Length: 113
Image (tube, rainbow, N blue to C red):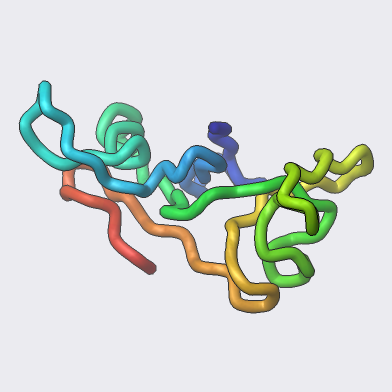
């Protein structure tokens, strides 16, 4: 997982990449449903964007990437690109990648945009 600030970090919320950060699970200790992104939003007291699907590295952004996921045709993970720029891209059909979920501090589960 990675947390990064967008170019204008003073006015932009962080984005979370990797590990299905918006996916909600039941936390037995807290006795409620939570996601990693929701916990981060609450603890940082900032809006956080996260995906509910897996992520993979690509030299193309989500709008231009031609792959569905980070696997090759034999089902092995593709090597991370060795060139820049490098993006974390959500799994999904080329040209139709999902949008991130938005997580607001202390407002419950993350919601689709």
